[in-house]
Image 1: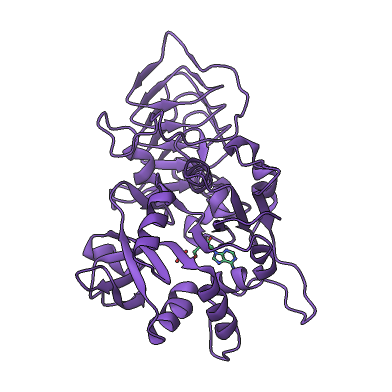
Image 2: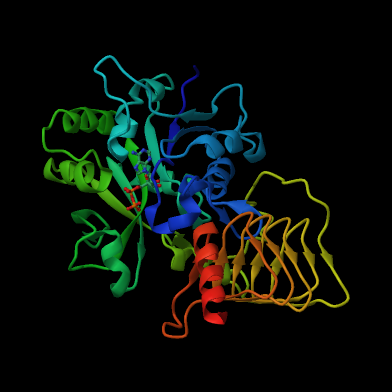
Amino acid sequence: MAKKEVVAMLLAGGQGKRLKGLTKSLAKPAVYFGGTYRIIDFPLSNCSNSGIDTVGVLTQYEPLVLHSYIGIGSDWDLDRKNGGVYVLPPHEREDGSNWYRGTADAIYRNLNFIEQFDPEHVLILSGDHIYKMDYEKMLQYHKEKDADCTISVIDVPLEEASRFGLLNTHDDYRIYEFEEKPPEPKSTLASMGIYLFKWDVLKRFLIQDAQQASTSYDFGKDIIPLLLENEKSLYAYPFEGYWKDVGTIRSLWESNMDLLDEDTPFNLNDPDWRIYTRNPNQPAQYISPSAKVRSCIISEGSVVHGEVNHSVLFYGIEVGENSSVTDSVIMPKVKIGQNVRIHKAIIAEGLVIPDGVHLSSGPEDESDILLVDQEELERQLLEGMTSKA
Ligand code: ADP
């Protein structure tokens, strides 16, 4: 294998429990976003656009869809003879270990994969974030600082801070403190889960960590604190731009809604930074004479007879006559009958919503987003029948 300056390792194996029904049989990075994408399109396109052509994708939970979606990487221009995309599921080893026990373990178990490219640096990415980022600029910064590890950071609101790894830096951005998801946040400078390491340093500490009895094999909980304890040089790389961790139903909904503003904070129509995806090969959408459509993303193969306001419709959707969809995200291949009302909801892939059904988060909690999967739909239908009886 030819030597590479950087190899990217994309962590895509988490279960994504907080996305409930959306990740029942789907890995979180394969969840749909923005009318035509899946979440993993963002880090893969960022790699491609940043000139990083060697990417290992660590899968584990429900990998089937993800594996066939990634294929040989041609949709992201990552099908290379020299480098390219490699899907790396866990495999049984001599010592009997099987599943990846954590994010650091996933990388540790693939040391040989990385080693064959003899890289200077390894870029660790996560498969559940929506953002556009030039990793090449981060690499320049990492090299200028001569850092052992550079962590991409963003300022987050204090009330959300305890969801993240938080850090404190000196004026020159050198990190002196890091805490993974502290219940009482002392800082609002959050790790974006994007790390650049000198490969020889990372390798040494992954091996050291794996020998400790008490480790949880996690970058945030174990590897970063271990580097700090050993006085390695860690720097924060302040990222300015749109970045969203879409790990919850609410944040996934919000991030989809962000695309609908006329002056969206996240422009996907940027010829200099295309986000690539696999084309579903559907016919063009059809908006019938009875339809009313405002402030929407409507994808290929959709047929709209009813009213759609401020919503994201993926491909192959039908909206029947006299139905209305407002402030909602409709995943692919959903069939909505007639006289249906949908408000502030995410409707899971492939559902058939019968005529006359009303779906919205209860009036008692207006701020809630309703996730409708098969189970929730059946519950609502049953409730509708009992309230009518
Ligand atoms: P978060 O709290 O933001 O989910 P984690 O550190 O748990 O952060 O996970 C970071 C990323 O690593 C996520 O994209 C997740 O899907 C992925 N991941 C978590 N555990 C594993 C694993 N055992 N193997 C591969 N990827 C994983």
